[in-house]
Length: 244
Image 1 (tube, rainbow, N blue to C red):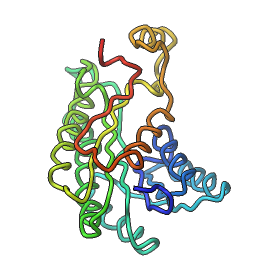
Image 2: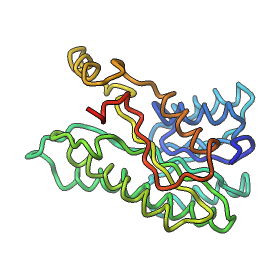
Image 3: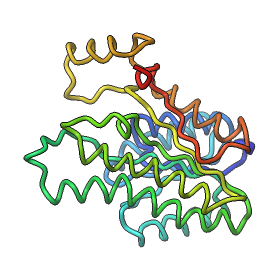
């Protein structure tokens, strides 16, 4: 699939990795849909950055855990550009959860946003892609799906669900829509990480460095343009940490 002139929706694209994916696809000529839920000002900043560079973009707001919001976002995009070619399910929540302190609300929040949100996007946007007999869905998973961290169990379980969902969707949406996942390691540190934690991560990574959001964005770009014969795959972008 050519990125140029395609319509690409990237969830959670007002900041961090999602922002970089949106900027990268825009640079390649895509018409970009910037999605946000609460970070309106940040989303508008990304929108203005793309437009200032000569790109085409719109911003849409929605809670990805709500089916009604997905339908509303879909209609807004179709009204503007009449099709949706690419969906990058990037939006997610991430925070520490000590095992004995995990509440029902926290458990449900992780599964509703990270897993259900990805499912709903694939179902509601994927329906349009199947009708058009063309589409690419790329889910952002996490190496933590396989290497579960004891202080982040709800998060890790939600991302393990994204991996399983990716494989199921690749079968359900074939032959017209390819579905793959990019599984990052540490490409941006959480805000509460200190220097010692950063150094520990670096030492455990064969390439001896923290990654960058562009590493993820370039992998997304490859899955769109590089081949139309890859589906159901999970690509780790982690500097080799998962092979330790």
